[in-house]
Image 1: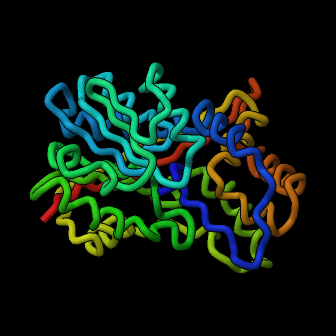
Image 2 (image 1 turned 60 degrees about the vertical axis):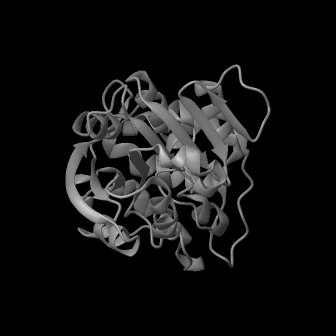
Image 3 (image 1 turned 120 degrees about the horizontal axis):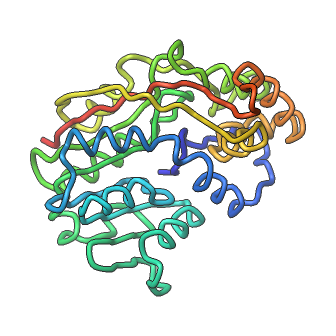
Length: 287
């Protein structure tokens, strides 16, 4: 799973926009990823993540959530497929002295380029918490593959283990929704996947059901998006990949222009940008 605020699905009929994946990964890690810190903190506090926790992070991306769990004393295992740039950043954060192997390990930390099955039974059987923090419920088909990944991971960690899923809150409580609609408007001629759609109340529950998980609690967390200036906001939002379809349908200059216009209502007197948002999380358990 790609570690973004939304999964990246380019329309089949459109050409992929030319982007520097390493620059985008840095923008994600340095600007956008921190917006979800309140979500990570709320989940870890509720589940009492600490020195006795052995956490498996699916789609760990550039590793901020794992780093926060490790700071609480948890042993962390992260897996990430198809995003080598962000995984490289996770290794810089969590394994700064590790070598160049595909799976990198140090005391209490394990990172793998691949899927949970690539970790081996010993690593996964010890885990007592699974997280899939990449929020869904913002783009059509953005949960594709998530249920399958969760269903594949569940037997590896055993019965009754909590699994955390995350999603966007109601659009009326997410100021960023108005900016994300720009992607739909510009990409509409392609009429492909990757188009914005409002979050639905049961998005997370439906994924859990398809994965064979049993819901066992949920919560909502305020996750405002705050940026130093408009340029910073544009870089952060584009790093999510959500606007790739719009770039493919038009061009980078047009997308930048319209995103800047959509951000105007959220620009404050000092030049900063502030957009209140609410995210949901669901705690489910393996059968």
